[in-house]
Image (cartoon, rainbow, N blue to C red; front, side, top):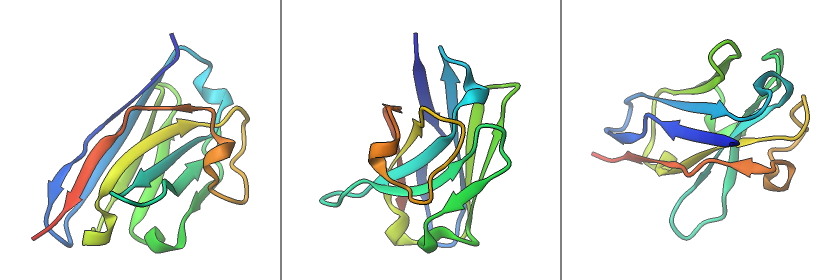
Length: 126
């Protein structure tokens, strides 16, 4: 059964850190790029980051560059999003998603991903 399960969300003060994990099962994990998206209340789902199937390429939305780091461990079928220097505007439900191909595209487009996890809430507030 194909599955993506996010964990690691929570509440943190501005400037704090969180580490999100996405555990995958049911498909050949090392043949798929994986992305992180987020959706704040009343807003469209936004692409945050993507990592290629073997981890050699990563992409970030401008608003998180230098603060967030995506990585993957293909031996454990997990993708991690390390989030540092968090800001209130990072508050959202974070989703991991699978691309049907090895590589990330030039754009973090929701339509390029064909399977999604259920999401984990991240709240940044003082």
